[in-house]
Length: 267
Image (cartoon, rainbow, N blue to C red; front, side, top):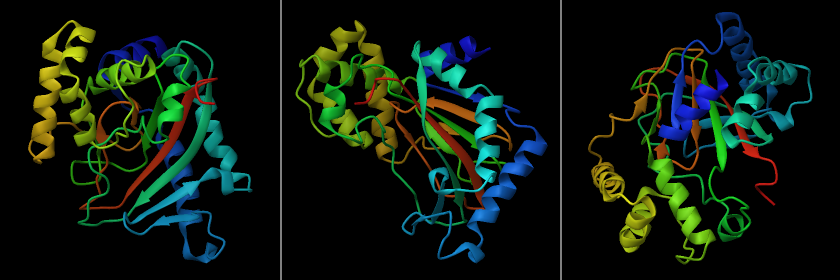
């Protein structure tokens, strides 16, 4: 099963897995997250980071000293997330962090279309032994998530563009420049279109990406790539692809997140 999942992520950059958690697991984890988000825990809240501009409460398990955190760690063991990550990276992986998002209803946007692969700048790109697979992230929905409930969106196949950019920078074919938003991402491709066309030996991949990037920048086609799912579903994706979050419009959203990287990938 893990081999099939990893193969799908390799191809599209993302996969949705229904019924990843059962109802009892959902209830148990949701109860823990709600407990630590309750006002009674302030000022020593175990949601130490409240991103007011996003209206998000982020639970970082590094701050939890009680046994409840073990329940969430057990999920990763029971569901063999490390085995999945190992299959994806084709080498030993490590769990980088676990956290949870408890998002309240809002009309504000969270983040624009972006890629996570360049958060840490040039030194990380230059430290890759293999500039391909970077991070694997697992979102587990603990509430039903419909298009208006804060579903994440992802452009399938865009991770391949990310691989190409990192490879070109790593091999010094193009100069490093900060890139994060879809506009930055697109500009690198436009400025080096001949290189990337030769890299893929196929102009269609590049042209399709640029077409979709233009539409998304102009806020067209934005619903096309949303990943709605029932509570207990998992969205597993390569962070190098272009994606975005959204705020729930109709009801609160709760998500448990795991992040894995290949061992020795980051120095």
